Image 1 (cartoon, rainbow, N blue to C red):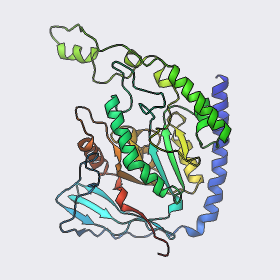
Image 2 (cartoon, rainbow, N blue to C red):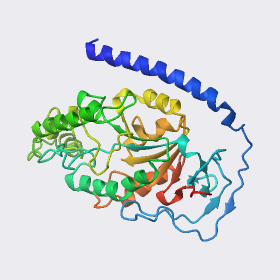
Image 3 (cartoon, one colour):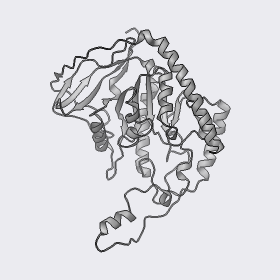
Image 4 (cartoon, one colour):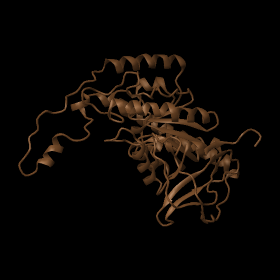
Length: 364
């Protein structure tokens, strides 16, 4: 085991011990605030002529409009709630969409954005030419993703940042020396001078890289009996490896997109460090609810470290259905792909939308 692995293991052990102590303290402090278990009345009331769901940003997610919709009683009902989050899910057994209100305590709620990669955004990390792939896999699709971040997700984060427990972003890799200077993490917060140094180092590292790989192959060798199999083996639909992206591309320090303004209090977590670190940090902060945003709905949003498959084991998770985009091969817009991915997730996840997340007004 090299020194870097030893240092990382030491940090992880220390973090785990600190998290355990903080969780114990919070559990003791908040024990009186936790309501007892209750019997939930799962009574479904048919909704007559309801409007479509996820209809505010139709270019990014096609509206959901099934024939049968129900409303159920309030599900999450915190004693000190000040955040309303209406949500829905789909049930084959109920044969329709089920909506329900929820009342959350904002201070027990985190907003997490999955993979806000800073690619093709002017920071230096860019799609390799002539055939490289990253993020939404073409420069044009990455620019569309950046537009969605600016128009939809950034205002949502800005609106709630000062009231929720924390805002977090997930990125690939581990906390390298450059990003450690740039972003607050679960281990600590960089000083202003470190942040300025980190920006310079990021610029140098990203601009020194050669963003060039091989072109699309001009000739393939096909057998007489299995030409289709041979064709796709030699020319797959997605190859983001060193052949087209250049060796070392995925080892670069991927930044948070410049389409967001990262607040000094915002926290970056890293996929390669594992889910346990994220889970323990959130629990130590007293977080019980997560509003999940980010990319890509059909891949990273569900299956990476901060994806809902992990988080929904330990937290009340609400997928913000218009604050995410699915990958959209063979289409100019992501709206139908995002609709399909969110609709499938709704079998076992709660879906909300930006217009359904409301803080109580002063005096309410």
